[in-house]
Structure formats: C-alpha cells, structure tokens
Image 1: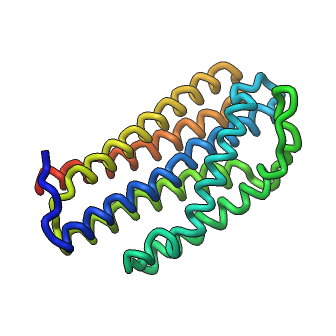
Image 2: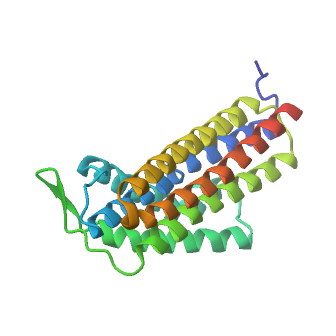
Amino acid sequence: MSSKPKNANSENQATLERTLHLILSKIAPVRVAALQILIHHMEAEAEGEQNVTAEEFTDAVKKIQEGLAAAHGLETDYLAPHDVTLPEDLSKQLSAMTEALDELDRIISRCSVSEGEVRGFRPVGNMYDLCCTRVAKGVSAFSADLGNFFLELNDKGRADVTDHTSSIAMEIGKIGRVINMVATNASIEAARVGDLGKGFTVIADEVKTLSARVSSLSVSLTDREKLN
C-alpha cells in the first residue's frame, strides 16, 4: 500500500491524478457511444435488423451529451482551479473534438424514443466521418495525449500517487476492453449482412486501432507507476 502524501506538492500531484481520472470518466465513454450511433444509422440505411436497441441509443445520447458538457468546461471547470493550462496543440485538439461533439449533439438531440423505436433521427452529412473519425478517433487521441500531458506534469514534481495512477490505468484498460468487444460485434454484423456490411468492417478496423491506442497509454501509465 502506498504512503499518504506528505507535503503540499504531493497533495497537488494526487489532485492532478484525480482530475485526470474524472475527465477521462466523462469523455472516454463518448467513443463507444458515437460508434453505437453510427451502427444505428448504418443499419437503418440498410433497412436491416436494429442491433442497437432504443435503450442503448438513449444511453449513447446521454453519454455523448455528458462528454460534450465536460469538453466545454474542461479548461475552466477542471483545469483552471489547479492552475493548469493546456499547451496549444492540446487546446486545438479539444476545440476540434468539441466542435464535432456539438455537431453530433445537434443531430441526436432531435431524437425521441416511442414504443421501443428511435424517432426523429435525421443524420446530416457523412456520419461515418463524424462519428468514427472526428468523434471516436478525436476523443481517443485527445484522451491519450491528455494522459501523457498529465504524466509530464507529475514528472516535474514526482509524488507518491500510485493509487491514483493505478486507478486511471485500470479505467483506461477497461475502456479498451469495451472497445474491443464493440469491434467484435461489428465484425459479426459485417459478416451477417454481406455486402451491406462492408461499412461495419471499416468500423471494426477503426475501433481496433482506437483500442490499441488506449492499451498503449494504459501500459505507459502502469510502467511509470512501477518506477515510483
């Protein structure tokens, strides 16, 4: 068991770890949620069986909106109280991610669920690019880079915060396993619907790439913990 922080500096590092964990808990689920919205859209386009239930769709909408709220308030509500400022590249990533989430929210916020069916879903533009590339991949890249940024902050004043680091590593690993599961389901769906499933194969490939990125960050966090 790790010892408790012994000074103000170590307490600050522990606070940063908790802040990172809180941010990731809000924005990381957006990736899978966006892919669920995309799968719903593609199945509707193919007029096939809807494997994303109305309840799952509603939950995906909730996660996206929670992630959007966290993205909008990330710098002012989560970082500013700790005197942390994002570097320019991360700030640009955050802006692009938030813009994509805003666009997706405008589409899904018009939806409602009635008698077990999603109604009012009227996608605009390239939903694959929006859900998979701009949202899912954007959130994944931002989460990984934000984690690395926080690791750099901790390197400047290393403290005994292994409990928090471990919890973050476990959370990222768990998310990675969920993404892998979604990729497997997408692959099965692709095989089931034949030519109409070509899009699902692409989704599966993209999700596996996201999962590998998350796993890489999880290993990085765990390795750094062992050095403490």
